[in-house]
Image (cartoon, rainbow, N blue to C red; front, top):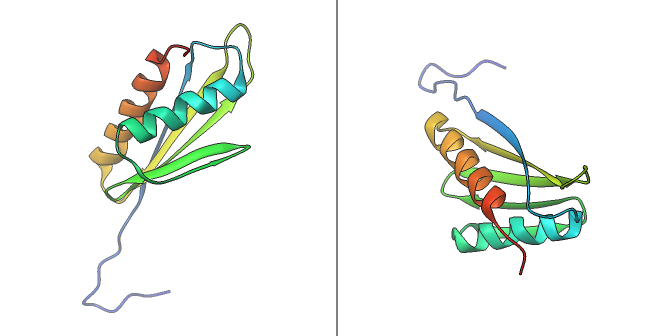
Length: 103
């Protein structure tokens, strides 16, 4: 569809990364992800059997955990209308989840 001349097109930026986590348990990986989102003050945090999601500012993030050997893998995705913010959130979550240790 066409936009009126007074409105500009607005893009979204999508970034993702993967990292191994300090567990071989997918369930524990999701617990790590949820803990990181809470610690980093994300809003609207939701945990389902297949992902943990939340938002911070205008950025939406999702973490999916996959059972890999020898350790589980977290796939972190972030989408925003702000390019640098999407990349920053992706990097923050990836780093924090990678560094989380069992409790």
